[in-house]
Image (cartoon, rainbow, N blue to C red; front, side):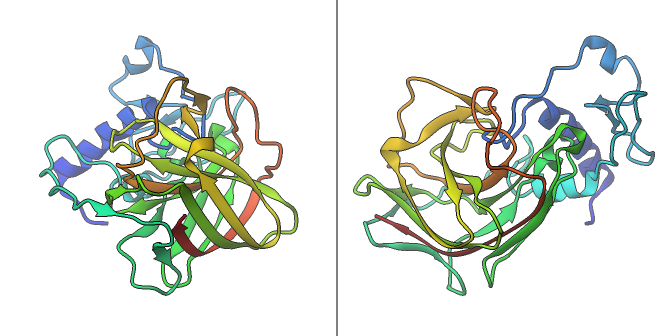
Length: 271
């Protein structure tokens, strides 16, 4: 990717912020906040790697870490995070969604696509890619560097009024050999670190139909459940899918394994 010197410096600063405020908050616990001594050096150090991008990451004597991909971090984060001084995006048109409406379809003319949002945003080295034409999401997840998830998120943002709907339904194909637990996520806020509305579902190998009733969603932040929240179904602004090592409130995903991920999206519709 091409960027000016000032833009590059801004993204280095954003890397510092995102290490403390993970935008993939539904999928991993909040990272520890560094002590003041962490910033005593002229080089930022985040979770054990150095943001002096021209040099190799540092390794401790007890934890050999993989190289963090700063360029991939920028490429992924820039799709979802606006810098403070960036021009404000135009207001989104409110779309009234009715039960039965198809919102995304493989090989269709869609108003949005999905893009990767992996644990690289918090220093991990898992990686995935999404092919819009086929709906194929493939990648490799690893828990090295304290990571452990891959994900995809809708882009650009939209604004759906789903007040007349009871939920969403995904049709997809899981190309695996054993059942695995994925998180299906809705967002009703454009806040950088807002609440995510999450439904954990075990997918079996082959074709799956996943129904996500709004009433059964779990509000979460940094993989912790948040009580007393109300889902704003008249203001749905994003959808996500994640395969994560982390479940909720310190529990681990019981149907998770590191390795390859292969999921094909076929259709998303309202019910």
